[in-house]
Structures are given as structure tokens and as C-alpha cells.
Image (tube, rainbow, N blue to C red):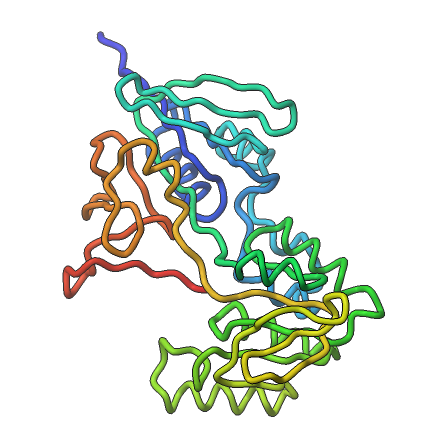
Length: 306
């Protein structure tokens, strides 16, 4: 009897989509070799809980962690290499080049199928602005969360400014007021959550203001003042800020995909079909990095919360 040929599946990225796909594939096939390469130091964590950990609504850091690399290996027989960044993909050879970020060594690996789960990165203010602001952060991964948590636990960190009025900005604002911080929310437009209807967005604003979040509409940050401890706004107002969080959105992390020659859609994500296939048949993608046909309209779409 002929042996069933096993496949090697490499997953680039090991957080939400990457870990989910890897564990699902293991359930479907117990023999295939599955490897995750994750450039950061953590896998499979609940990113949606991070704002609430910052404000001590979620009290234990362990509650955010879903599957550590060791758990993925022991429970699901998935090999995980953290702090390993995939630098290039050669689709002709089914080969990837990986950099071990701790040892600064390069490795080569091969695949039968590859899954792009690189996610998205935070949009930041221009360096000409951020260089003038002390203690400015984004919240995109566990490393960001840990840095913010350390700063927030400093008793001198009392006044918090959040730039951006999407989901992450509002969740952090609400969470930190529960923790007794003085929070100011800077909104570029005339209301929060532009993805919502105006009446619903207004209800959200009312809840925030009732929880003592100060909201300033129609402004942007121009520069930092007083050694970065003050922010000058586009309306000439100046506000004190011990810590500033930028939460102005995310963009798909497509640099590797572009280098590989994968088709990029009109919204900026990797173009996939209804089977999550990219323009290269044995490379698949999903999550925040992709653009896909909307289920109803069939128009290009992506869903990203930031």
C-alpha cells in the first residue's frame, strides 16, 4: 500500500490568525508538518483584552495569553519559532529565508503550502511630531502592552492623552478612567467612531463623558512642548500629557507579500479569493493583512479594528 504523502505547511505570523489556522490544520491532519514563524516574542494572545489589562479591568496578564509556543507544541504538535522573522519568500523554490532576531542568524526552510498571517501595523504620527513628544506609544502587541503598563504604574503618570477615536482608543480611554487616570481623547473629526451611525456614536460619547473622559473634537497634534510633556493642538490649545497613546488606525503588513509578488488589492491588503488563496496558488492568507470579496456586495473589503 502506498504511503500517504505528508505536507509541510509554514505559517508566517503566530498571533490570532496564524495560531488559529495552525491548530485547525492539525485537527484536520495529524501527520502534516506545521511550522509557525513569529517575529515577536509571543503567540496566540487575546489582543482585544489588552486595553482592559492596562486599566486593571483584566487583572492578570496570564488571562490574555491563549496558547504559548510551548502549549502549541505540546497540545497541537505545531512547531513554533518566536523572534524569527521571515525576510523573503521564493515561490519558485517554495523556499523562505528567516532571520533569528536574537542570534542574528539566517535560516532557510521549505514548504509545500505557506500561509501569510502577518496582520497589520499601527499607523503612527510623522517622526517630526513624535520626536517632540515624551512617552508616546502605540498598542499593537504584547511588547507594546507591557511598556504601557509599566509607564501607567508610575505614580507620576496621571494625565493620559489618546489620539484617535476608533475601537482601541475608546477602549483604553474607558478602561483608564476606571483606574483613576485623567484621560483626554483627541478626535480629528466632529465625532467618535465614524464607522457607526451618528446617533449611536453620540451615545458612545455620552457614556465616555459620563465616565470623565474629556473629548476634544476637530483637532490634531501639531507638536510636543515643554520637553515633550505638553501637546500643542491644531486649534492652538496646549494640554499637559504624561503619556500619549496613538490609536489612529492600522495598515496591512504587506511588505513581505509585495516582495514575493503577491497581488495587492485596491484597499491595500493581499488579494485573496473565497478560498483564501492568493495570486500564487500554494500561498494562502487571511486576517488583517488581506482584502477579500464582500460576502454580499462582492466589492473589495477588509475588516480592521483600530
